[in-house]
Amino acid sequence: MEQNLQAYQGCLLGLAVGDAMGFTIDDKSWEEIQQAYGPNGLLGYDLQQDDYAQISSHTQLAAFLCNGLLLGVTRGKNDWMRFCRLALQEWSRSQMFHRDPEKSWCWVAKLPYFRRRYCRDVRMADVLRLENFGTPDAPRNRYTTPGAITAAVAVGMFYNPKRMEPMQVGTLTADLIALTHGDPTAFLSGVVLAYTLVGILHDPQLPLAQQFRQAITLMENQFRSRFYQAEDLAEQFKEAMALAQSGTVVPQAGMEQLGCMDAAGCLAGAMFASLTGQEDFDKAIVTAVNHSGMSSAVGAITGAIMGAKLGEEALPEFYWESLECSRELGVLAADMVCGTPSLGIFDDEWDHKYVQSLPPE
Image (tube, one colour):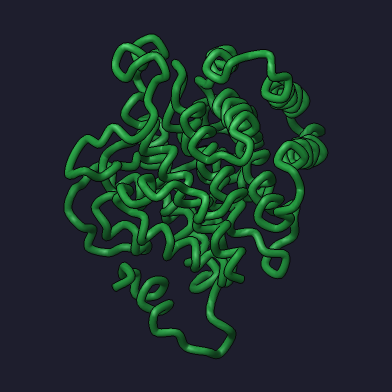
């Protein structure tokens, strides 16, 4: 249980670390990053305010969806999609108003850093204000951006063989991301990420490269009959892995080669950064954010993967000490591990968070 908790906490905290580190250079090219921070790029947080590293919507979405999934098992008889939609809509409203909502489903909505208006994909927030969302087979748009990809982190952490069948991981992830991002390359990339995290959290001894290959195969087997893009994505991810394992390219050159501008490119970049980082969280995160692509998205994905693989204890202290939401993310991670209180047992703390929708005290 303790080892499992370390992996879950490492996953969410790692996501937030990579997001916060990449967020400050998201709009810069690699050349501009070098001009601002030196030839090796950004090597740690660029603290902007109050000496705390600030998260963006990548971490916010993962937190809201973890909260929504836990609401689903607490109050909704496992109606996960309903409560995930409510959580996403609540996050979208938080991007419009600074005041506390009169009624809230999610306790994370009560905390200022989970509501701050740092959305990395404004079109996604706009879609969430509509009445009708998309599905994988009936998309509302063809967005390929990585704005919703961290939904996959919440689903990957939520999986438990006592709670859902393995293939439901892919179905739920695709359905969640397709609400706002209708291109198959976006939601199928999320499926690969979710299966990767399930593998890491439930079979931690398997090497990371094999985790990636296994996740790619699961995505292909489940979706290639419906979406021709599944095979092309599989090849794209395998090429990124081969590039990392070849040892013939320096990390930043490899990241520039991969592009990292859409959901598929960001996941390919995270795979590359994770494999070149090996067992070094810091090395992987530095590689993940220093390039001309979407640094916060690649950083968030890489942080989630490496945090889950190595555990919270592998995150250098200076990362999580300066992170503004580390305590609350640790609470969410612990709740994702335990699920819900045993049937018939009242838990005042759980009731406080998932019935009264109040933040932990």
